[in-house]
Image (tube, rainbow, N blue to C red; front, side):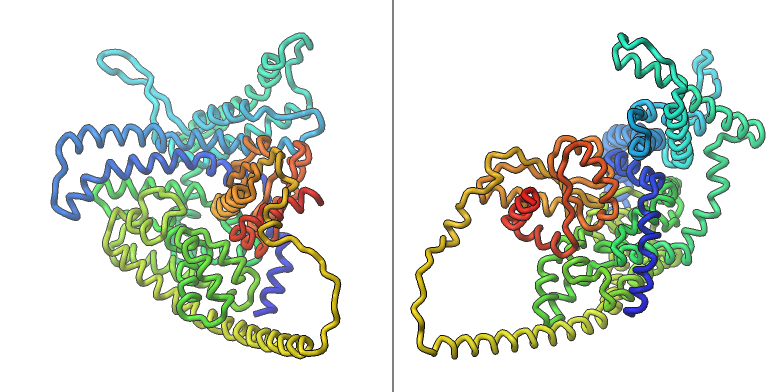
Length: 586
């Protein structure tokens, strides 16, 4: 197994480059920025489906005012949030890509992120939406078909965003702009500078739209979906699901955030399939698409990448080593909420040959079993976009529209994951027990030696006064009186919240005024200038050099602890503050 790990390490530089590709990052960050829309709209969708769920489960029919007024209200909110998410993702993706492009632009030249966002949203509408005329109440009115404004238009969103930002970059690099006298206010001058770039972007996508509608009689969005639908169908197969949830933990095992590499190319399918499943359910059919965002979160990544939900429980109940019992105790609650970095770095699982096989194959087993339940046992494919940090068993039950068979699936998955992980946990536990026994024997030998030394005639030594522990903790800190604002970034704002909370707690105990907040890498660009210290979690450490360019430009201190050190800091509030202080003084 060690030879396999060494082989994977050799490929790490290449995979690092893939994970830092600016277009994949833009898709990921664009979705991250649009996530409040997706999650909040799903709450309204959940409420609108309650009448059917209640009637199915209990036979009780809700009042007419609920079935009509409340349901219509919730459906309206859903249609004007999730129903237009494609437009929003075009804008957020363009904004994220603009930030990456600006870091590569010549000195003194920058792309206006607001302008590219607006241009991309307009370009997406041109590519995806069909306009026609109709008579309503005897009057001629323009009608827009909204089908492609939501998740069905996501691929058009990406094309619009990428085309727009690159055209803007081309125009700005070559000064293709309208130059106004220096007396003109900057805000007005900027609007004129973007006219050519905006116009060329819209003209480019309009030509594509005309070609598609003339030659194929469909909007560009439908052409793309037709071309890539075989790929999405292949990804929804047993082989496709197995490959996807094999690659995600494989990258994580090497210390690269797997979802950032694998999922951006699949995001359109992951969210579009949710809409398709919902439409199928509402039409009275069986939603059978397994490839959805939460199927991955709650089934393939039950407890986090590697399907680790059961692992802390194994550590606590069945392992003998002090290290694994301590890790199990510290990580059992976070892992239930899919925050498994305390487990990955403290056990450790990352780059630990003992865990390579279960870490890769437990997720594969989970998705194959999950698809089997959908295909042959009548379980629904997932129909809502729920928060990723929802405990997997609860999320699975809700996302299948409260089907009891989903709870059976959860039990089966936990049993299977236990059988996969247990032998490897036990083998690693035996090694740790042996190491701990050797360490204990060495400590006892040292104690025996110390006792013998103490029995020898004592030599009077000078008395040195030392501060007590209480006095030491009360000693003034160099951070007192300083305006310290810390932003902790990780992949999904999970472990970053643990460290941010530890810093707040440590600051309160030491009487230091520290503002500490958590965030997800990719959503930090608009707020990073409000902080003077940024801490990168280990899972986003691959972005250190890119982040360093931004923090140096803004005069921000950038820190990045290693894996186990990071987890230790989340559990040691005073130590976390001391670590910040030490690194600021260095």
